[in-house]
Image (cartoon, rainbow, N blue to C red; front, side, top):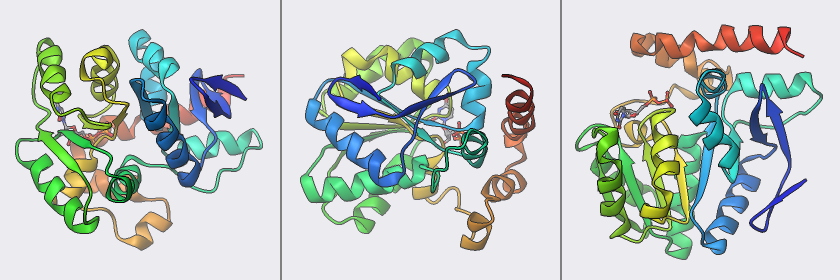
Length: 247
Ligand code: UDP
């Protein structure tokens, strides 16, 4: 157990990337606790691509090490843990976290800002989330197409909304680096990187049918619909190779 800013953690590193041994309920409890602590904190969802990228990206490694919660967000990550005798019941993905955080916001009024995806998508996602979780308090939205030179300006724009939770959907590692570099400017109590989740809620990307999700083949479904994801998909065999060959 490691103690960081009053949140107790059970951690296991995978190829150097820390991963919290949590299911969805424990992840949500940790997020609520971080909101209560009130200091800017980072939540990352760790999939195999994040771990492979971190092998050659020192800044991403630093960001991952600084995160207050790192959820196991892929079947590859669950597999690597299982090989070490750690059985987690489920992935804790960005899409599912967004849904649960919006549910929490409806219950407790937490202020949420949605940042990321193409122009218009975050607004559509906000509308959809308000329908799904009546009362959820989305206080602002902004698209994610701006250069890193504008990070500070965008973070200051976000700060004006005083979000408790800043949900950033700009892809790994851009979203994590943005959240970490600007944490003292945006001041959100929890900043969380959620990849393509706003596309899912904004209606731009469909989740795979339940049966495909249950077979753990959602990644293949996404790849067929969007071949530009091939480089990311190719990190999986690389990941498997590294886990099998490194001690
Ligand atoms: N995106 C963005 N700004 C950028 C590049 C990408 O907001 O400069 C968005 C893109 O529109 C998409 C998301 O980031 O909504 C990336 O989704 P993806 O599923 O590729 O993320 P991953 O979780 O695979 O890193």
